[in-house]
Image 1 (tube, rainbow, N blue to C red):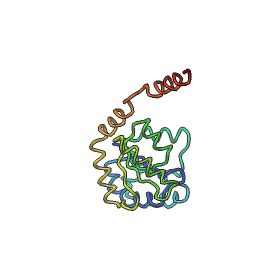
Image 2: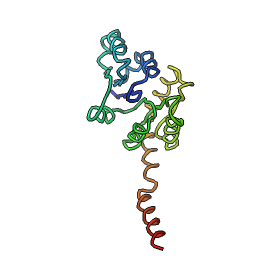
Image 3: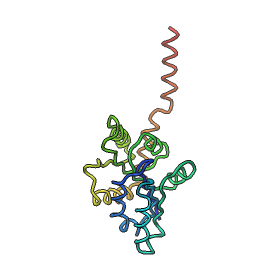
Image 4: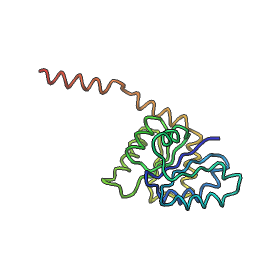
Length: 181
């Protein structure tokens, strides 16, 4: 059974948590969900889990906050990620070649989350849904679509990231050459 790691940033996301509560019963029949809720909505998500049918509860892991080794293991175990689009998680997704649905925070500083998500989308490794356009059904369909093509999303990262493995080395050589003149 494939695993979806859902994470709304280090503080969690009430918006994403709300979507999860509506979509989880349909997803849990086919996927395991590892949900990092944030501390504010943790008890609400735990209560939600307790009200799910018993056979679905086992596929739904709820945690308030993940850090260190738990964070790394959760990300590594994921087949697909649903997340905000902070700089840290975006760089981790690209490095690990993790397919993701990104829902950028609407009011991030300088619209950085939108720009981060757009950059990964251009690489081909993620799909982005702006929060103002996000519905439960759209997110559900996006997850199903991506699940059918996980290898394609991973390959897109590889193709993009392998374009020039010596780019930094070449740039440094050029800078040194200019400085020496």
